[in-house]
Image (cartoon, rainbow over all chains, first blue to last red; front, side):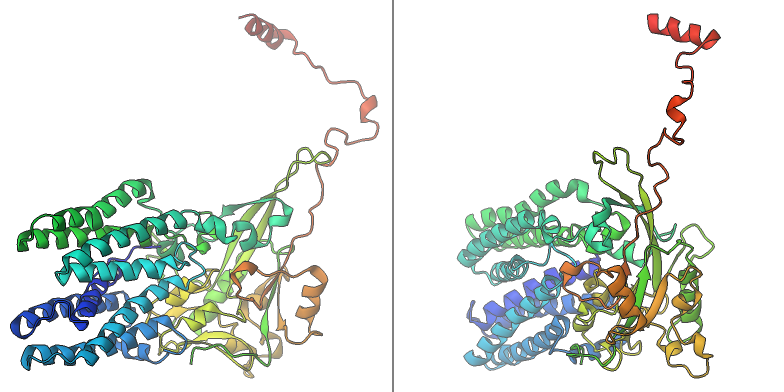
Length: 290
Length: 258
């Protein structure tokens, strides 16, 4: 799959933003006033910034409001609905903390649940696609949720939780890679089933339909960067989890915590780039690109 | 709603005969022509005369090589070249429809045609991600999703002569490799043709239940059968000289000795 920067930024930052909102909603850290204001600004910058960046890959962003209508069937629509409910609920809850010094726990709980639901619905957009066997796995939502919670705990300053959740995210990520590497072969979809010509012998793509490229090849047959996949995976895991955990284990200062956050975000971006770049869409079979 | 209809009255679709298709791409061109000049956003080309031409097509013809396995009775089997037209299969369980967040993609209850309402399409591309066949392409100029409409503006069009009321690809095919009809009717010519010739689904394991059927190619003429024995009298003919003579013979022997 083509790793569109807008979608990589969107999933990473909205994940971290909604993860932070989850912790804030549950009262970790239990802050009020200007401290709470600072936390909420960071959370909204990440979550809303991510959502806005996701509209950059739309052909007609001016019609984006229509995307709220199909929540009964579409995970993308459900994501939009959950995100709005989470953001509105958490804004009310945040206003209570910042302006009235009051913690309206029930609002916080609802906001936290919808924040996690937003991350889950995002992950289901990818998980539901049978056409991309690497994503079509329960480990995909597990990966998105563990990243969101780990990033959220890190930004919320919950050191113990952050260390544990970063480790969980790393394990889930490695499992997803391990399973994903055999996913296309395990899916049973081959050029033989794609063409129905398998009974006659071995099938090979002989000539593409056009001499030039097309939308399908640009969007689905991305093969650049596979060569360095293993190196990038190691870099991603070290930056995303290993280095932040080591930094958090050191005596806490704000500089060290900031370094941990920067390292985690860089690692998460690398991992998410791989998530898209390594995903094999079955339509590539027709073009002999698998 | 982008939920799928539980059943459709008709199941309009195509039978594509892989035995007959000669790979001339006439269907590609007539499709592009009709769907650029008529219903919906035109199918754009970008850099059409430059170094990196690209364009939107609703129907593309691939070519595949099928190499039969080496068996005792066919020690050197000949590869077959199969031309393979591919357009929307108007699936019964169309995954492209249910993923649409705006309701722009839908499957018609009356005839099962899968369409895009272009004024509702936000161009997110998710339906193209969900389609295993590459049947949907985002137009790079209009920024909306384009797909085969089964020429919905031809098949019911009473302004056209009756013989033209079928999809442009079917109407134009010079080999008669494409057939249009209603698969819900077991007596329609497409249903019969598909039953007779073992019409098959593409990627059945994806669970999309395609309406369009592909007819497998028949075994080709066996030109090379018994190669070396082109005549029953051949074994009685004088063998052709096995060893080279003259200068080449000398060269051959000399090189052997080196």
